[in-house]
Image (cartoon, rainbow, N blue to C red):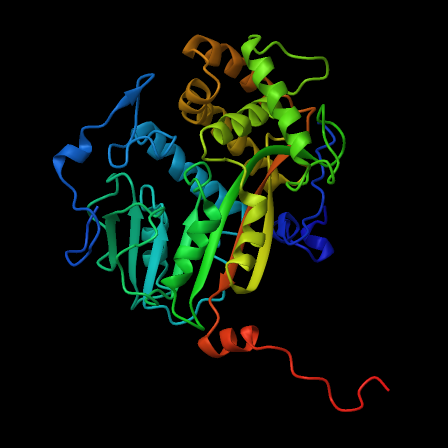
Length: 392
């Protein structure tokens, strides 16, 4: 990786369309009154529990992660680390003069509040929607929170009304992420409305071969043959049923990602969707689509001191995230008991502390613009007839 003295900052090397390899250290809720969304009442706070973790009540079961205080703290920490890894940027899309902004899957509302505090769009109304009414009540005057399910095809809002729609970490929440992009497009201002999706790929990667079982880029392609994916998933299920016994040259966190991928697909809400978003966005009719990939190291192994600090915090976060990301996913998707899950997670946590394995995760940020009506007509128009005598 280039150093700042080489003309490339750690952020630029870490976050780009084709990020450079990471070098290892030699040591090695306030709601608006005119909304058509669901009103918040006390019955929606009669939360269900699973393995002593609290989950959302509204549209119960459609989101696999908890919503308790522990999870809220984790979500905010994840947001801050990803923001730091991306150069403290809140978004990348070239949004200008936004007056109406929507944050889909707002969680604690941290992005909405941060955007309002940044005063980048002082005249904008910033609305955050989520399945859980867990947001702070005292927020900037232009921030509003509402209860809504973004998987619905009709958001009951004015079409073409948003200048910017943002979402982060919806992976595992939607049965059809591609359809979400199609639906969101209707609510963007034609010609100037932007959407941005920031999603994490749970699978660990490695540039220097230090991670057991590391795959080549071709083997890691999301477009792999269905038969290969089925084989991987059958193996994951069999290993889970056998008590998660490690194989030779095994990296437990990689195994966790494989199991979580399989279990989430069985439940119809896949976790590994990040690599597909650019393709889905283009297919949905967006233009000026761009992908930015950010490498986030797992552990303090990077040589660069800034990345070392990010990696240390990220490894701690991943370790703390494991129960929330595993309890419901593994119990419902793999029929594992809590004891089986805890035994497996102990192996995973141990693997995360191994500094000799230089692994990292990829965060995918994809943004695109809704074309204007004239642009749409131009794309749909038939090609002009060949000129007389052409080709002679």
